[in-house]
Each structure stands twice: as structure tokens, then as C-alpha cells.
Length: 225
Image 1 (spheres, rainbow, N blue to C red):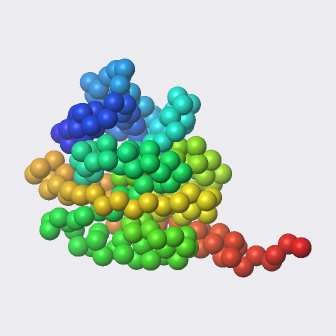
Image 2: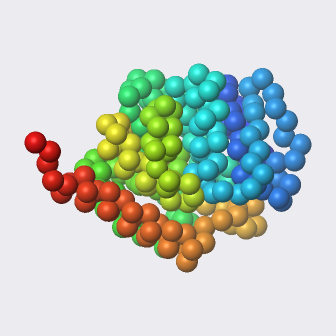
Image 3: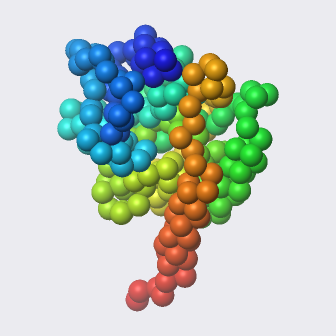
């Protein structure tokens, strides 16, 4: 089971790990218990990736953590890279460390091509050199991300990754890009994709429309004298 493998790999790589169970009903997290270096945050209802991140973020900030590394629990993201990304965050505490995926040959072509469009849109609206807008393996300054999320009604579902980057740049958080491998598993190997091409792409389109309106207001609003 990829969830348990991912949890074990993350705990082997870093001393403090929290798992957010976002209303899952498949029993994949059954038997995972809190420990001094591991916590399970259970949400009753599924709210989406952004809601799960927000739940963990609030707990992290409340516990005094200054930075959070976010990764998926399906085995796609490289737990062995956690120490390197956290070291980069320690060296540049003011920045967000954005993973840049190095795709293997079996990566779905439609996913690879589609993210190129997102990258262009995010670079234009942020004005920053963002090499990948959607890869979820990242380190964020925790307090800055919490402020941005609580100030916006968005960033609650699958649209979290791209909007969080843009709004953090607008808030003055610099970007550091760092390559990292990404793996796609077949169903036979335990890979399960929750990406819904129609619904999630529509959600991304609405998010970009909302961001564009905010970007246009920032860029073209009348100056105050």
C-alpha cells in the first residue's frame, strides 16, 4: 500500500511527520497511530488538497514550526529528497522551495503537456521565474502561507498549488526552484490517481479566471494620490 510506504519513507527521512486524512473512507490509514514523531490529522469530510494542507498548516503554526514541507501520500513524491529540500529552506528561510519534476518515461503525456500551459499562466501573473506551477513537493514558510490562505476563499481543492505560488509571490515571498524526481505507478503497482480530467481542469480554469481578475486589478487599478 503506497500510503504506508510513503509514511514510512517520510518518517525515515525526517524527524517530524504529520499525515492529513482528508475524509478517506477506504481504510488506508487504519492502524496508523500518533507517536512522538508522527501525527494523524483526521478530517471527517473530504474537502480537497487545499483543505488538507490548511488543516496541517494550522497545527504546524500552532506548534511553533516555521516551515512545512508538503507532499502527496501516493508515493509519487520523493521522500528521500526531504532532507535536501529542508536544508535549502534553512539556507533561504524567506523563500518557498518549489520542486521541479524530473519525469520518467512512463509519465502520462497529457499531464506533462498540460502543466506547460499552467506554467506560462503562473509566470505571467506572478512575474517570477517559476519552473513548475503544479508539482506538490514543496517547502513553504508556514506563517506566510497561512496568512495567504486565510485571506482568500480559494486554494481549498486541487487548485491549491498554482494559486498558492502566485499569491505568495504577490505577498513578497521569493521563489527557489529545485529539481526532484517524480514517479507514476500503474494500478498493478498500487498507483491510484484521484485527478479527474474534466472536473479538475474546469476547477483550474475557474481558479485562473479568478487569479486573472485579481492580477488585472493589481496591475491596472487607478493609482492613489
